Length: 266
Image 1 (cartoon, rainbow, N blue to C red):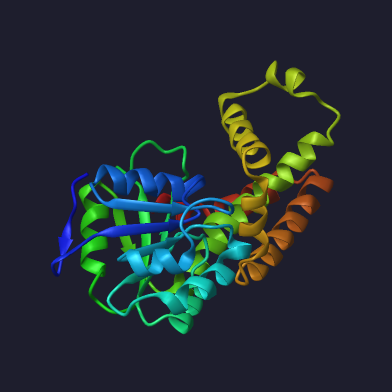
Image 2: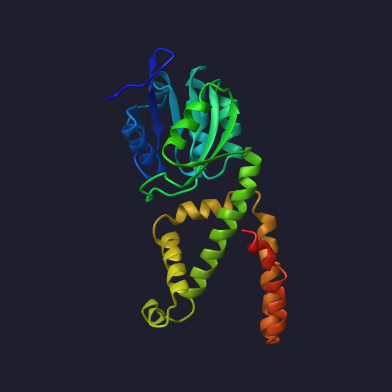
């Protein structure tokens, strides 16, 4: 095991929730970089007090509903010269909890990819530096070294963007999946009539419904910024239903064309 030095001390990285999902992904990632990695799960691994005492960096990677409680458990044991960070899909509450419960440096981190991704190359990773500057350069460097596009922002701005990118997006996927399941058509029958676009959408729906539905449910329901976007979505659905009811193709076309410029600039 190659050991990295910082201020004369070896790097040891602890990951709470490192036995599955993104925690496991980052455990492998840091191990390949040569760091000493210690993981804990619900029933296995190092307890939080020992992890805080031994590790220079502690990463919290647990379901969103449990994140604040885990942070409040580990936070009081963190050293002032260490780093406490999280990998959850929301940043406002976890970052606030880390700042309140610890004296260490604090960085909120959200990798915008899933544990099935083979490499960080070309992926976006959001960082929300919240306290201290001892560790941010180290984290930026290691992520950029592996080809990640690092985006730095505030927890508030991150959560608002996630209300759209994840919340509204997954809301749409779940609604369509439920509608398909109630349509009366089997997947076998639909496959005979599927276009490439429909096949791609079915793969996304399958991922949400069959791999980790609890994660997507938390993303949709726990972001306090999602409400206005869902209300807007509902108004648009109502407007579109009206065009369908009247068989008004011109009205629907006009609705689409009015927003076309937004997508031309992408």
